[in-house]
Image (cartoon, rainbow, N blue to C red; front, side, top):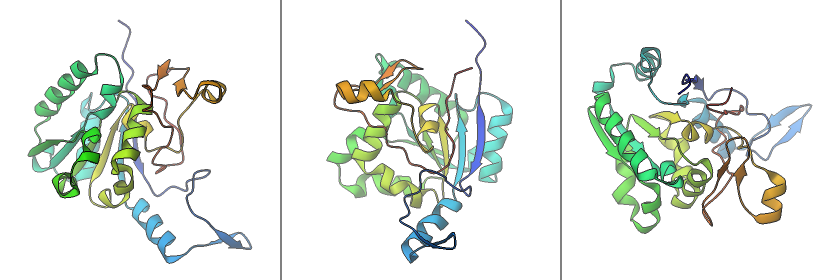
Amino acid sequence: MGETRTMLRVADASQKRAGHSEHSQHSIHGIPKWTGHERQKESERNSMKLLLTSAGLTNKSIRVALEDRLGKPIASYKAVYIPTAMYGHPGGSSFVWKGLREQGELGWQELGVLELTTLPSLPEQYWLPPLEAADVIWVSGGNAWYLSYWMQASGFAQRVPKLLSKAVYVGVSAGSMMVTHSLHVNLEELKATGRYHDDEYNTVAPPNAGSDKTLGLVDFVIRPHLG
């Protein structure tokens, strides 16, 4: 097996987000004019702390980067782990089990698991309070199309900006890709078949459970594992 390459990007969401702004802006001499609601949304994004990786806390420097974001060792904090993307691959349940074991070994003060596919059938008061109490929201890797679909369908995506005013977002592979401004998709194939396909990874969305919508929190694109 070849060498495993680990990407780390620690990002403040305070950068300008060219090309993916949700703002409907009018400008005077090039100066954007925002409504109060738009200013509030931009302020929320500017306060976010993101740790975007290809494979998680695979070395000491990445763990230190997370603890720098938090302010104290991991043992002082509560985390919520979201493994949804893994189920979008064949044999995904075994990957979920491995991910859960790794989370247990990190030494969190408290660890919860949130499966996005369950949320549409549950009252909000069952799942939202643990998210609001979390210091870290950890979104695993897997099938990015599937993760995108369930982030939207579950209502989680709409909650992220407010949640990240307090919590640190840790992304792994597809979880990191979701905060960027776009995903790579074979547009010709999408138009012809309706199928979401990343021809660089050869990853296809499961039938009727794919989306290319991202959270758009940063203005760059992440392509884990390539190179």
